[in-house]
Image 1: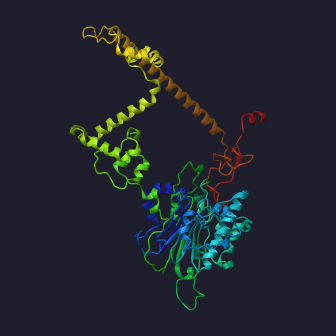
Image 2: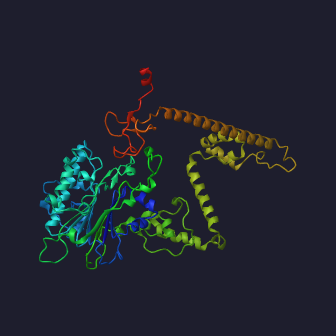
Image 3: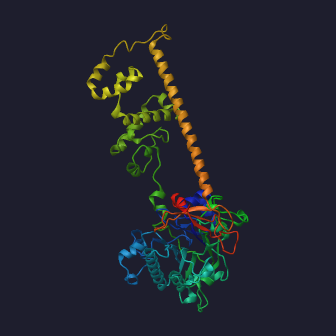
Length: 571
């Protein structure tokens, strides 16, 4: 069995990168794939099994729970299989418990032989006291849940982005005070070598492997020189599945974990694609496709199958937005609340699939069933000529009718009278005002139009008609006005383009050169709240890397001038 954990940094982007969700999942060739930071409203654990309805495979969960406090509404069905004793968390209020589960950072699935925790740990800056307290509470309560299950004899596997690099070997720029961080101390305290019950699977399999990172800063291009940290982990705790009299030398890790490693082929920057002395240019010279994390996998062996079972209630196949609504031609013609209630397709219809028409043209939804039958009867009883129309002609006619109805709705307040269409163009605007103020006069004028104005010219006076000359003059004036407006617009566009080029050249001339490489810097803006928020500054354009590497970022920094007055004052 293969388990993969991956911080995708947006699932939609990764699906677009691989072409489809199926291609993304198949690329791992895994049985269980756990995603973090999906940036979706629902968080689920994907399991690839032969049958999601009745299967004996371990990868299909027996039960599932969203969150880890046991208080969320959709986790009640899982309480029987994965109990959480109230006395274990009595020191926390219900608001505190719901608070740590409010950000959707954990999904628990029970696979009979082990309980899997898919965790996305919170991030907390050095001076953000509120997030530091949240992170402390998050891991305190999570550890209580782990201890509760271990006390019941359950085996636990924890995967995910915990946002903690446990040791200096797991961080590219670890300083002297690195190990004193409270979250790193907590992480090391739960490990077996320090009296805890968990094993860091990757570090146990690769105790001396250096520069084994899973996350890199995407704003500095740190992937180019592998300047990152290892914050994506797989932990396990509990006994093995073997039955033996001497179990002292047996553990889940030693008996069932065959391999654990980082899938570096999913890195955004690959060695073969980044030539020596490559310039990062602040991300402008190259677009690195992929997440800022790399997946981590673990392979298990000697895991027996379990009894036949179906998918848990939290499964995505039971979610309406995934399961889908009935898609029929009739449902297109109805409002959403009515289409959800229909369970049988209506066979009697000959309409095309879908047109860009506002469904306000169709009958109201409160009598939708009768209205649809009535609409179908009208279509069915119409002439054979109408039925035999081509799809394009029918769509065109429907679209035209819809556009006309929409235009009528928009212009209803400025509706012109019928008489205004028989006046000269210069009088139409005045006539529009008159038609809105005196409707009764319009009706009289409409019923008795002036015969002189409605007179149709004969063939003989076609070329000498004063009205025709007036129309030609108006047409020429309109063409000239359009030509003049187009010329002015083009001239303004050219002037704006030249001005922008001038400003861009001035900006280029004002960009300083970094001292390490004598190359133009890149401008950035301070986004952190404080006295310097919003200020611009310049830094070296190369990718971040070790200070010992001359090809990496040289560390140059300079504040941008706040305004031109500073330059005058300096002179």
